[in-house]
Image 1 (cartoon, one colour):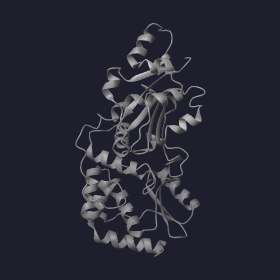
Image 2 (image 1 turned 135 degrees about the vertical axis):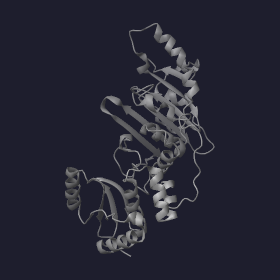
Image 3 (image 1 turned 180 degrees about the horizontal axis):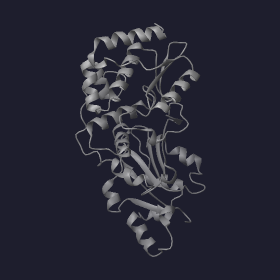
Image 4 (image 1 turned 180 degrees about the vertical axis):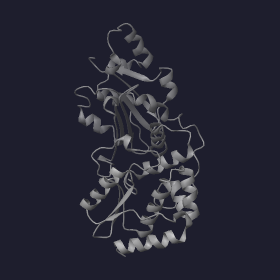
Length: 343
């Protein structure tokens, strides 16, 4: 069945009529062109009535938008569209995510489970996290937002059963071979810096190691000629790469995920962490990055004590991708470190 404007309106009217919680909830504006949607969105922004807008394509695809350009879902499944409209309505009441999940569950138990799972399907029972969210990876989120300890956090993973040697990776990026061979630690670099207080040499350094099946390399500026030996770099067998970059002066915080040599980004040219607002999925529902949406919803529901969106985001990356950083090694300055060669 191809969804039309009339089919969508009739389906929502029947759905809302069956559930008291949806009494008075109107179907979002349904537009048939980009120009019409843009006009609706700008008009709503002026009156403060922004929210979900629907763009209906000729093939029956319903595109959900927040504002004129930010697409949050695209679906030709009528039941799925009805759920997403109800989800937006319950969430935007502002009673909290737990209350929104309960409300959706009273409308339809499968809808409640779907909301708690964060995806577009019914996940069944979802186990709560049950541990300190700031222990594994999110502990670094606060300082990283201010570019500390490093601007760039990069993670690399090989095919199952293989590991990427952290020392080789650091050397290919330009780490000082003598310091790598000597097993230099962060505390050793700080001792060197204490003799030269006139320079902020940490900007010319890196930290590296392995945690959670990923090899990590943390640094500020990448030195010229880094990984110039492309054959040696390819021999590392990198299958996945996550790169988080902070530019606090410009409020730019990017997330890049490469898998099998291609970006996982739902065709977006850039993925920024500041797109994430508490309670609202930052990425296309059902898209390539929907695994982050799901993990964020679980983080929000499992850890209502976390109000910092960066901490929630980093916890979600830990849960979905397994990213880790050894907190104790950094606290005790025992993490492996080196200056760039020639720095």
